[in-house]
Structures are given as C-alpha cells and as structure tokens.
Length: 487
Image 1: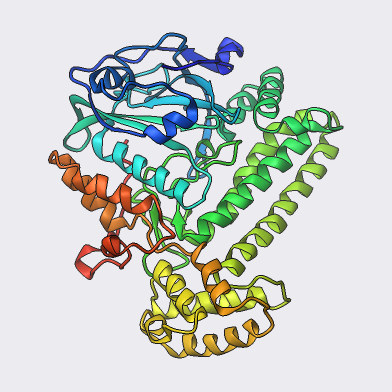
Image 2: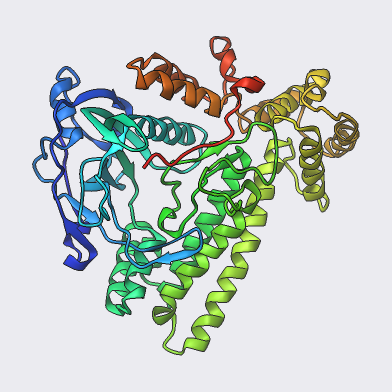
C-alpha cells in the first residue's frame, strides 16, 4: 500500500521517540481522499474499507512503517515550553509522491506517546473532521497547507469536558519540522543537533541552498520569505489561524494545525475567534507581526550556525528579519492588487486597498462577499449589491469612484478583469457556521452535512447555484463567536 522511505527515522535517536499506535475497538472509515492517495502513489483497495480503517486507525502498522513521535519545544502564547513533542500524533512514515516530493503520513489521535504530558493521546470526532474540512479547503483556495488523507472513527469515547466520539485523522505534510523543533535543540545547547536538523531541512525543502556560501543564513531567509508569503495569502482569504505558536509554524511554509482557526465574516482587523486567545495576540491583523516574531525565535536558534562571531550572526539575522517585513508588504499588496483587479503597479495602490478595508470595517461588510461582489462591479454590473454589503455606504461609494479612476489606467477589458478577479476572490469559504453545523450533525452520526460542505469547498472560485447557501453570511442567530482547540 505504502512505499515508505523514512528519512526522519534515520536521524539520531534524540530527535524522536519510537512509539506504536494504540489499537482501538471498532475503527470505521469515515472519509478517504482517493485523489490525494493517487497523488501520493498509495495503492489502496477502496473496496475493503475495513482494512483501510484498521490501517488508518493504527490497528495495523503497514510494512515499511517506522512509527515515531517527534520531539520539539515551542513558545505558546509567548511563553517558552522546553519540551512539547507529538503528544497525540504518530508519524508512521514518509512516501515520495508522483512528483518526486517527500511527504509525511501522520496519524493524529492514535494513542499516547512519551510526549503526551499525561494526556490520553486521542482525538475527538469534531476536531478531526474540522481539520479535514479546513485543510482541504485551504488547499483548494490555493493556500499552502497540510492535507487530509483519511478520517476514521475509533468506536471509543474520549473524555474532554464531556464524553465525545473518538476519531483518528490522517495528515499529510511536506514535513512536520517546526520552528519549535529547532528550539528543542537550542534549549539544550545541542549545536550538533541544530546543525543536523538544519542540514536535514535544507536537503528536504531547500536543496538549492546546499552549495551556497552561508547555507544556514540563507535557510533563515528562505523560511522567513515562505512564511511572509503564506501569511499574506491567509489575509487574502480572511483566515485567522488562532494559535500561531512557534510549534505550529513549519519550516516548509505550510499551514499546519487547524484547531481554533476560523474565517472572517464581517471584516474586523482585530477579530479573534479562539477561546484561548483572550488577549488577541493572534488576531487577524496581528498575524504578520507574530510570524516575524516567530522567525526571530528561529533566528536565535540558528545564530551558532550562521557565524562563529555572535555579533556578526546577530547583525545578519536582524537584516533577514527586516527583509521579512519588506517581503510581507510586497506579498500582501500583490494579493490585494489581484483581488481588486489591478494588474499594474502604482504608488498609491496600498492606500487604495487600505481605504476599501477601512470602509469595510466601518460598514461591517462581509469580507468574502464584498470582494466577490466587487468582481461583478468590475464587469459593469452589481454596484447596488456591492454597496448593500455595507451598513455605512458613504465611504464605499467614495471608494468606488476612486477605484474606477484607477482602473482607467489599466489595459484589461471589463471581461478580462472580472474573470481574473473571480479567480482569486472565492465565492465559497468554509464559513464558521457551516463548519459547526457539519460537526454537530456528525456527532449524532449524520455525515451528510460534512460531505456536502466538502463538496462545496473543493471548487471555491466557481459559482455553483446548488451551493448558493454556502456563499452567504450567517444569520445573526447562526454567528459563531468562539472556536475551540478540541485537544
């Protein structure tokens, strides 16, 4: 089934703990991503769901697997924890996909590990299905993210605030190496471990850096730029991660860990959904600054590798942190130029975008719907519908006049511009109330809402009348005010 080639297991033993999944009573396959399996080169017999359920629940360890839990540390809401690690996730192995890219196959909720910190190592059904929906939606939106291969019910209860049905999530990632992985070795002053890990990441993710003069400095820069580009894409689709701890930021530049994440309904730059983010540290607007803060923590880890002279190492690392800001601003402006139909670059474009966002903030306009309706305005129609998104319309009306004047200096036709805008402004996102609706039904054994939502988000940039209900904001009584980690 799997053609494993397990490179992380070949690293020194202090990088991980060998551990096998703990079998469950009655595994049942809830969802299997056949398209992703094909991409990974996994030969799976879909006519035997019981066999697939046994493998993806961890009851059967496939040939060639080397199950392990990765060691890492991390800053959680700004406080450093020197040892975290995979407390409820087990990496069963790696495959090289049909494009020649190495990918991790990980079971989340497959039982306790040496890093479980007195936890049960299990996962509840709701968080498993949430991650399935959100990771596949992000992929469809064109945002780099881990992927969902399968979800399996365990036939057992897990105990959080209340008993909940248990499940296992099968996650696919370019790798699970995090900033916190480097912090684990830095906290132990293990320079050899840091060098081994950095060399591994370069070989796996940034092989073009193998022959450069200062590979570890360039690694820092590559990761910084990957994260700057990623967060710009987050903001472009109204995504709020919710727990941007250093152990939740990958070196590969993929979005990982969809615990309390959510999407904006009405635009509010300080919006927070996560129940544990009571100070707003990871609010929508704060995400670029937090990403830069996290990169600074990675820089601290890499200092001994960047230069033997610590002062020189600090100076060059700080320069990269400065470049992060420049890279993010350029990436963000590129994203929002595209969203507003600007194919050329002019000096005042940033101010034009900010003026629209300010009008949206004052008018409590729905983020996704506003930009989608702007596509219709670009096509020469739909102005009334666009303005109806705003409770306060004066700023939006004024902005439209300025925007149209700016468009006069563009060469694209109305049809070309509208088509380009619709390709970057989704009609459908996994709206929070629809996600919660699907999870609530699943807890009662009804997966129809989950499956329907997956169908809706798999082609987010197309308007499909049969999914009209997924394009509209929530009614007041449907609004989701808080999201939860569910761990």
